[in-house]
Length: 479
Ligand SMILES: O=P(O)(O)OC[C@H]1O[C@](O)(CO)[C@@H](O)[C@@H]1O
Image (tube, rainbow, N blue to C red; front, side):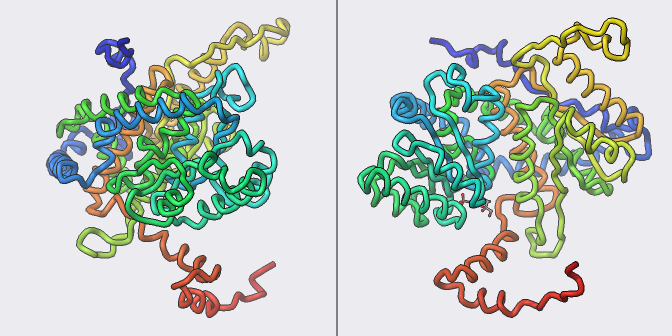
């Protein structure tokens, strides 16, 4: 059977679009807006960056770019596995953190019913999904005590196979499963998604007879949503993961050009980079659709861990990186908008908007005699949210504030796949502009090592000593 994403005209109709009009001087004024010449001044750097990115892909260093092709067969296998096993479980739990959780959450929020876990009909025979994504004791205990463990499967996701938060979650969930169902049950209730060749999780998974899926060595956690990291929970909740990859492949086709005026990932990177260089380091992502809200969370990790760096590739201290911020329309119009309109000129707002929401809901008419209320009746919530986005956008323009918009014709697996890929590629080019390694995260290590020391992990005694020798706090400064 032909899939809709094999049809060229459907694909074209589902293309997500980046509108950067409001980044230019003609719209937001000369003081803050850019000219086409400003953008063109980045042409040579884009061409060089494109060359470097494509060469790195050829060399096998940019795994995320291979996924739309390399994971087609894996996605098919995952889908078959999920469909064959979904009836065994009422609950699917992701144990992971950061890049091993955020993509799962973003996919679920974007593509499944907003009350998926509560709505049996919407689940259509698939298990509920839980992604605790943290080690808060109240939250985790609450979850583990609530679930019927005999009907629950856990996907333990960790690229390194040793992240303290994830392994703690695993240890605890495993102990509860063993207590309730016996040692032999572990293999049936845990999947491991990890690096094939390194780390402790793969060793444990093999010993325990757990089903294993692999995260390619050349794909970092925050770029891994389209590996088994994101694909398994998506398949277990009925998301069309093959269509998701097709969306990414489509964006890869669109972006395989060094012409920045034709390449949305690159044009986005250029404008965000120019803005950052110009004293506008706050990069706000503001979806006007609740189902896109967790894309902004995914984006925060992608941008922050990839671009926030102390050293450039020559080892010079540069301390660069824009600050990604998430907001939500219309909710944050009533919380953040005042700041965005009148506060410092340090932000670029990227709106995410949707042409066709999954549902249409009319605002009920009423109170004919009160014009300040009755005007709403007969309109739809779709109109209200869309109009509010356009109104906020214009208000930003009126206040000379830089902003741009990514439009989703619909929110579906194909458009979400495009979005992930476009932002991943933008990130890679931003890395070229800053001349940094966008694929490591050395800055998170120090905090982890102190924690290991305090928790008395073997090999970290020195960190405990340093921690214990930390400067005493001045009590007068604690009120
Ligand atoms: O998948 P892992 O190795 O458990 O790592 C989880 C997260 O931790 C980080 O390494 C940061 O601490 C992220 O880059 C990563 O997504």
